[in-house]
Length: 208
Image 1 (cartoon, rainbow, N blue to C red):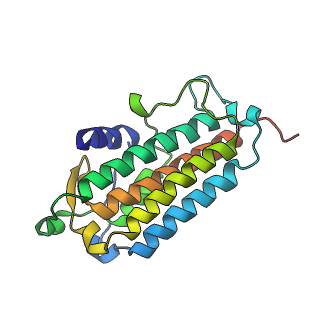
Image 2 (image 1 turned 135 degrees about the vertical axis):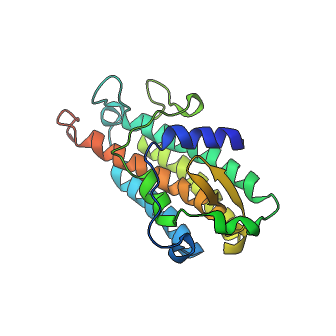
Image 3 (image 1 turned 120 degrees about the vertical axis):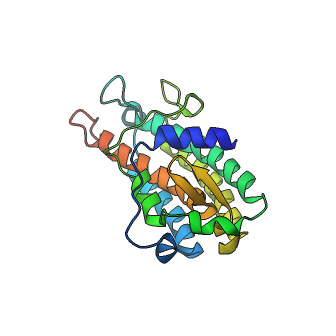
């Protein structure tokens, strides 16, 4: 699972994560921020896709671009995988002695994953069906909402120390458990921006 996660991160976040001037510990958010970000990113996605027709969900701006249906499928597939990774990682023994190795801030993680100027290729396991699974946005949102409930319950079961004291290696350097959990809603935010790009296309079907 860890190897798969690192491969996913490497292929889905091409943007370099730049460390800010302050130390990572000086830019840490708390658990309330993480929980709010989970809710905010779900709400933003819901606002972006609620009420879209099947034609709108299936629209592609180009043959090699994803439809909104495919974006939704990818978000849901990825969230399930990332939660499993985090549950596995955070069940391991804490290693607080590595905390001073973490140089990335929480905002570095958010800004890196949501930077749409850097494109990426999803791994095969997380690539949606060519036709797009969803013809009704409400169905996709219900699935994601169910997964988000599990995620939020899991976060609530952890203390901030539980999260910060589990440090793992990523292609961009050591990250803590909070960073790994933050990546989940950040990934949703990234693809909500992608959905906005699809909707902004001049040929996107108009509302009836």
